Image (cartoon, rainbow, N blue to C red; front, side):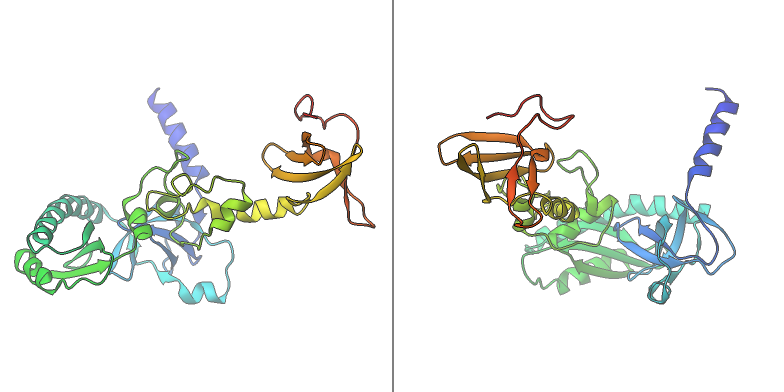
Length: 309
């Protein structure tokens, strides 16, 4: 590819980015923890999707990536927005890269000290704050851990402010990242850090296996995507007979045993021992009696060639 073609491709990519005008709120992802922050831009410079900025976080000023503008601008959005400090400079980026090298060394040192003191904790990550002489260590543990002596050991070695923060197993997956069973980046790391409650009932609604190994993520908790897809399945199933519904058809009564939203098929078992698998389009609800009935005729266009009857 020629230089002119490369320039054209880069120009098209830049034009396709979401631009955030000065004064508009936006969302940014903190690089070291993958936490998202609501930010505002009080300066006169324009920002775009993918830009690196320095923003205030609960840990201190740190590097973050601009994800995109906020779709709804209301009073509550502006009230909670953190003002961006600056666009990341070459000095900031060089310091960040150097910190990554130092963090690997700090992680190994801290892990050795944890082992020597026989503390029941698992070290997850180490991070140097960009604009402050502060070193963070994230860890998981089943209960409370007395790490006061460990902090003294770390302070004597690194000679800066040390903070140890205990996080949950879902937060660990968010910080470390990884690939889910779907082959994509973990939602908590690449999509959102707002962890929603997930229940086994959501898996039942989606006709998934209740084997915990198949519906759990690397964190050992139920998959976050069960929550994201739950409303779709609930809405779709309201249009069709519930499992257990009894429907008279062909001189007997059939009971709905499964409603498959993806394949658009409904399975039924009859009192005479027969089993049916019919396309959803052959089911109709009487507007007066509110009872379901099965229509005779050919399968819907685009469905399987013939139902199993």
